[in-house]
Amino acid sequence: MFKKVLIANRGEIALRVIRTCKEMGIRTVAIYSTADKESLHVRFADEAVCIGPPSSTDSYLNIPRIMAAVEITNADAVHPGYGFLSENAGFAEVCEQYGIKFIGPSAAMINAMGDKITAKETMIKAKVPVVPGSDGAVTDVKKGLVDAKRIGYPVILKATAGGGGKGMRIVNGPEEFAEQLEKAQIEAGAAFGNDAMYMEKFVEEPRHIEIQVIGDRYGNVAHLSERDCSVQRRHQKLVEESPSPFMDQKLRTKMGKAAIAAAAAINYEGVGTVEFLVDKHRKFYFMEMNTRIQVEHTVTEEVINRDLIKEQIKVAAGEAISGKNYFPTCHAIEVRINAEDPYNDFRPSPGHITSFHSPKGHGVRVDTHAYAGYSVPPYYDSMIAKLICKAETREECIKKMSRALDEFVIEGIKTTVPLHIQLMKDERFKSGDVTTKFLEDFDLKPL
Ligand code: MV4
Image (cartoon, rainbow, N blue to C red):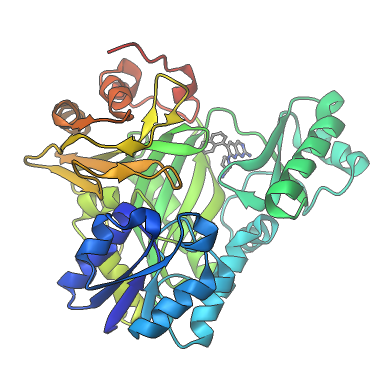
């Protein structure tokens, strides 16, 4: 087992990893920017190294500075958390070269899933269902129009270097094709330095259902059931739950098998997530694979009663998994509390938290680095807490979440708490009839 893990991240996930390491008897090193001096991950780690000024490029994204912190603290492993360098193949490679275990996928696995055309071709070979689309890249308008006609409008253009919704364009008919392709290429070129595009049939009002997987270095892969992440806004998830209200055991078995096949196709080692689009006919299609621990891993932890960070560290250290799949034994919902104003187009609302009280009680979990007196810096992601509730049924879970949200006191900044309070009372949400379009149609009333 590792002796000392450096956590190359900040906020709640840094704290989350520190907690598990402590329970496993592993020493921890926090890194921090000058903006995070007062952050709890700095306080609760065994050691902490300041690596630079607030700007991410000079701190949490700065590989040479992080490697210097690894060297001076003698850490033998790095946990990248989510975001920042968690899916950076270059960082994984540098760690490998220095003999430091990167608690995440290898550079090869990141690259296999990072290029979306390659990923899709790999999935087709592994017999994982994909959305019908172009054969490889869309290089010119003339060929693209022929392909789009065969696929049938509406189609969606996606950047092969993209993911998470960046560089996507919907095309409703041939008259729009040239214009949308050019716009998408310009956008993708600016965002990723790569303007290669591919095309798919546009699946209307899909659900976003993802399967948690885990693999070890001996070739065993298992699934840990699904999370429904359909409640999103501009590709930012706001609510996640497990089991999905749309799921039944037959579909879970099929999607679980597909997710395992997807991970096995790239010899996946570690914890990962296979994202699917699911249409109203219960047809599911591979969307992308995330090769990191995700924000919403906690929902799975609650329903299968396992510490996923612990499992992740164990497989990274070379332990074998049992290979058995896990199924939900209760219902869990997570809401993301962001320092944003839901009444003002979700504008970031950083600043000083004057008062902070977390909900408590049976079945209530809060993962946060915030506290009364903490200042939310304006430089990073706006998520300041995750509230996770679990109960025997979805209905009970929603009631518990409503109760917990009512107890949440955060003063001094604006947060997404009022949005969640109303969501939990929404008839459509309560019925489980939620697609990725749901939040667009949701109108927030003054409290
Ligand atoms: C799609 C789609 C419909 N049809 N692909 C968005 C994020 C990126 N991973 C892929 N995304 C989509 N791909 C086809 N062929 C709709 C989306 C999409 C979406 C997916 C999941 C959750 C929220 C979404 C919001 C808008 C669009």
